[in-house]
Amino acid sequence: MELTQEQVAIIQSSGNIKINAVAGSGKTTTIIEYARSRPTNCKILYLAFNKLVKIDAQKKFTAKGIRNVTIETAHSLAHRYIVRNSAYTIRTQDYRTYELIELLQIHISGDKLLGHIIANHIIKFTAYFCNSNANRMQELNYLDVITDGKAYEFVKTNYSYIESKTRQLLSKMDKAEIEITHDFYLKKFQLSKPQLAYDYILFDEGQDASPAMLEVFLGQSATKVIVGDTHQQIYGWRYAVNSLEKADYTNFYLRKSFRFSQSIANLGIEILKWKKKIEANGDVEPVNITGAGTSTETQIKAVLARTNLGLLVKAIEYITEKKSIERIYFEGKIQSYTYADNGTSLYDVLNLYKGNRRRIKDKLIRSMHDFAELEEYIDKTEDRQLGMLVEIVKEYGEEIPAIIENLKTKHVENKDEAQIIFSTIHRCKGMEYDTVQLVNDFITEEDINKQKPEALNQQVAKINEEINLLYVAVTRTRNSLYIPENLLPLDFVCNHQIHKMRVDEVKKDVGKDLVEGIIQKMIPRKNSSGYDSDKSYLLEEIRLKHTEAYMPWTIAQDDELSTMYCEGVNVKDMAKHFGRSRGAINSRIKKLELKEKYQI
Image (tube, rainbow, N blue to C red; front, side):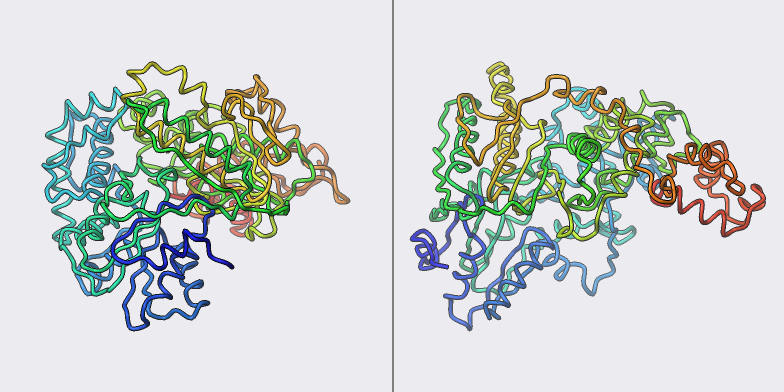
């Protein structure tokens, strides 16, 4: 591959530099060539964004025969310095609210809901501090990162109590009295002010750096290189900052994309111009992108959405309206779209919605008196992921098990075998596909134009990030893009690569009409042996067609079995209760997928 003049200038540079690289501009190739041009006796550290990027980078550096580069993520580096050979043990996930209520003895006038709300804010305050570059908690104001009015007022009223309990949690982790989180040992690493024994440090995806890791990076004596894209910053909600703006280094650019054509580049440029509408002084640096991609491949197809709900809606459309689609794949696996990060299952939320309290496994959801209380909890905590599960439940209700069952049936483990790939933008970061279709759940130019100036001024960072999400989405394609017409910039002219999709007003708001008759459409065709008996939601039809079947399970028995499973009744007792063998019980549990649906 022949290097561009911009790439050559970066490779031949000296001193600390920052590289603003547009999507698909060959930044990894540039970094590899930068490292290879340095003396072989130099020690080089490459900081990757996550484990997947780390593994991919290791393969690429090895393939080029470069052996003087150490590749780490921020957390793997911190783990080596802080956790290894220490008394610390690490949790695989963040603390749950009910755990903190017990650990920190949280009691608010005997109100369980308030206890969970307090615990949720303690978890978030801990993450905010651990990702920050502050030396002490008192240097931060947790209210600064709360945007919802109800949540803000709740925290303001209970601030001193939340802060004191957060300090207590951090103290317990510091003394190794309890397990530590990944964020915690990263914070310990930053506070230790480490000096890393490297001659060069290459910091990738710098637009989404945690302030803690950025301070570690900036404090090194090594020659430093930051690479990223200002317009691909999409993790502000996780307290990330744009290090390209924070570091006063020599500027370099990679403005030529080898992924997509100039028509896609032009669309990206026009979308980014929306930022001029929300900046107080309109002083936004013009974006210059050259599209040099020439791919005509159409094999790898993807549907990309802003939200889990939007993606689920579009996936349902595909499997019900496009009968030829038999093999689908969800980036991050389909299970990740039915669970919140805290482990709450979509099925637990559904059971609360239906009033099936005995089937709820999650302790947080079980503590709720009713669905309205869960919505109150979300309002006062800004728990967006749990809020998304609530929206899915409100949208589909009792149809959810059948919907998820059908999606699972068509889901393949090997992405290369899929006819179409489904993903949200956060899960497909760094990915590219031949053909991309966008779901109609992104910000639009009309959305921005409707906002009052004072509202725009208060939410500049948030709206900028929403614009970035759409920009990232359109630049995932190597060839063709299918985009709802209302997502296009006003007066934008499409061509043979950018296909404008008419927005159906009935489906625009992801309404209930979208799934009308879904269950009927989901019923598979008869095969040579009759109906597909593996679909638990077709049991009643099977019974009608096969009345001679030996001891069929009734719907009432399935409900009773599910309840007993959720209550922890052992298989032996369930077998005795139903008058069946243990093998029959285990077989039924497997067929109903109770382990998958109700795992903690």
